[in-house]
Image 1 (spheres, rainbow, N blue to C red):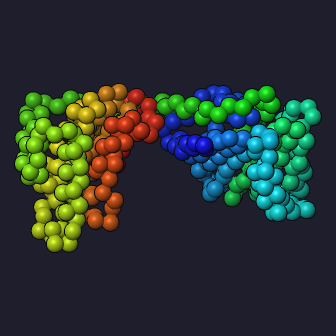
Image 2: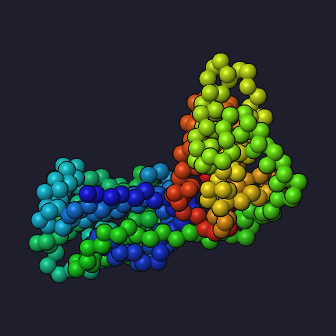
Image 3: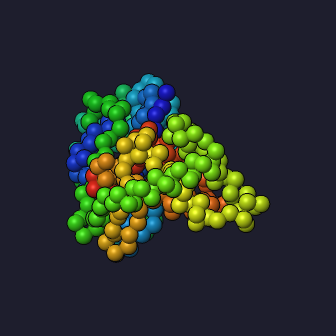
Length: 332
């Protein structure tokens, strides 16, 4: 059964070297990545890496690496080779004003005995195919603008990528948090006793308004909050409810439930631009949620998905996106 992984590189990066499927990639931590996708199944592994770059390379830039073990993956390898081959052009001219040749952006030092076929689908879309009796790889490199041979993503992958013919690694590449510059750090302070008391009072009001018992499980309380938000988004209720008051009471109760369920804590935050907020934060300060703003946004805008319970369950399950300790990445 195949498994897959979505990767976000806004706050995370690869380790310096990664091994996945049939490849060994050096300098992976320096790749200018925006997002990625990996999938691993019987006989087939894929890694797709994308970059969101400034001009002159603005637009879609991508490297897709499809890897196969034979005989199980042979049929799919043949299918994908045939599919990409349908777009092969006899002559292509790169943005550098040079004609394509099969060695351009090809893997350096491929294993002996492996066959190689390189072709272009256009001057901005290059495919390389490598095959041995037991393994196969198809690599696609493309960019919608700018040059190709010195492209920050394509050239970096070309420089660091090698085939490791004896390996078959199905474990996904590890991501590690990016360090946060001091100037970009958010300053935090623990709450005063008065603020703690205010949160407790607001939570009590919310519990009373929901007609639930305070002793029920946090997830059940959050489910009741979600139901109340749904009700307030209905046209009949939407006109009559006070979104400010409801967002404060329900938001503070939501945050308090996260503190009880996951050990998060309330903090006042001061941002680099001087703005301030009240948030619940993870123990290592890698993530934050501003629950009052979160609830308010869903009450006043019925078109916005009501994800009160979804976000809560995601955090409790430990499925928040990767973020560096101290970075206070906003979850909303």
